[in-house]
Image (cartoon, rainbow, N blue to C red):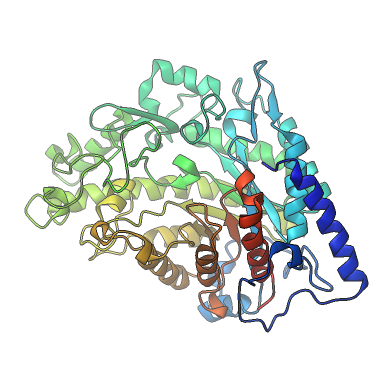
Length: 523
């Protein structure tokens, strides 16, 4: 969060902006080939003559299923000569529940100063996680939107736009102790009695960050299924903030798994089980997933395949070499059993997203009839880039992406997104392959290129995000390069992960501001 010196920084920026605008000075040279000027922050210009924070929307309808019907050339054409708006994600601990059980915005004065500074720097909007555990935290269908009503109004008053992430997961493992947001308390109480509503690994360890997709269709939550809980939450959100959708709220991402990403919690962060670059473990051992696996095995006439997941797939921190399931052989991922299991495992994940996004698309389509401005429906996937250059891609397989050297695992996922007119968000935009040790066979660049190819084939839009905090010029330059991979294939937006006190330090701010200005300049 911003420190006290940010107040003087904001005042200085406002005064400098008035001075430049009064003199009608053009503050950004579009012909300048250097993305990051070498001048210090004290001389960095903040605004272009005639610059507006929000460009006029190109259409008056939701970007939904009609998008997929356009040709690839049309999709490419609509991306030409457009700037990439930047959203900055809120601090991880910016909202929470106080000791009295009341939802609160933490450090609201410092947050307000930070938002004003970002606005003056040229940031387009703010990415806000809307937590299930905050809004419906106390009892089923008792929705309390007061915190987000205040927060959205604060952001709107400053002149920023919103990217909203409907978050059905917990962030307790990524927050300081005692400051994270859990799943709703009434969900946790059910989980205390029935631990199989959460994902389990082969040793029975539970991951409480997200409900297992195995309970999607079971009425275990006060007579509702998990899918009905998600749908009711989205309906309540639309009912409360419908007037803001397409105007203030420009993007809505729907949580599909841990960290909001469509994946299994195969690489649990923060509880000591996994460390990079471990291959992770399959997460299919809750009783609901195992019952489904048994049914699937019986349907193919191999009931013995339904007793358990692969038993020769190593552990969380294994490397793939010497692990039979991830090598060539009779008991590998290439075997009949291996193909059956991975088809089932990845298919359940895609089916989970398909069901949730169908409900979301139906809710948001009504804004076309109301002639509201367009809104993007966004789905996030994990960025599993380690061991990408091996034959088996083991870290992707355990996460639920059936992607190997002989099978494109992202094409069926992109095809599903296309049916719902959904945009795909992927991280790792700041990464260079040369920055990772060769012995881990990493390739964030290769993964990103594969995603670009399937998105072009299936006619879906992409948005980008960084995985790790970067303020250095090389990292920011790589983000810019990936956002404008080709002028005709610019991403729809970029989300910077995330706001904190470090972003406002002079040495970082002096790189971040020109990066924002360059990104926001029309191509």
